[in-house]
Image 1 (spheres, helix red, strand yellow):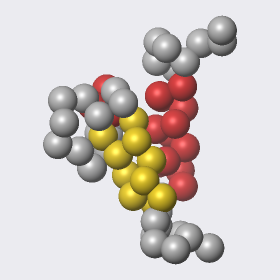
Image 2 (cartoon, helix red, strand yellow):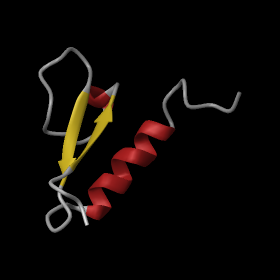
Image 3 (cartoon, rainbow, N blue to C red):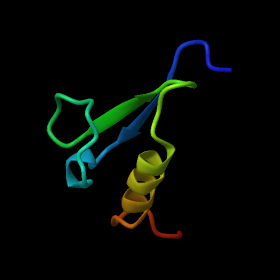
Image 4 (tube, rainbow, N blue to C red):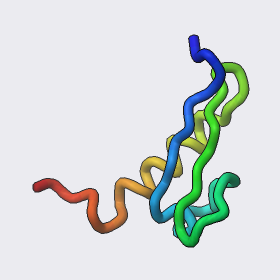
Amino acid sequence: MFARFVKVSFFKGTSLQPIPPGGTGKDARWIDVHEDDFDEVQLAAWIQQAAGMPGWGKS
């Protein structure tokens, strides 16, 4: 159980489709994940998109 929520940040969030709702910075966006109110399918899609961006390769 979450105490309140978990913030998931995407450093190149403006490159994701659709763009995650949180953010006021240049490229970063985030979403607050609440235990009983979040879209699992959309969150998975954003994570898959982010994983495919440069910088996530194996070292």
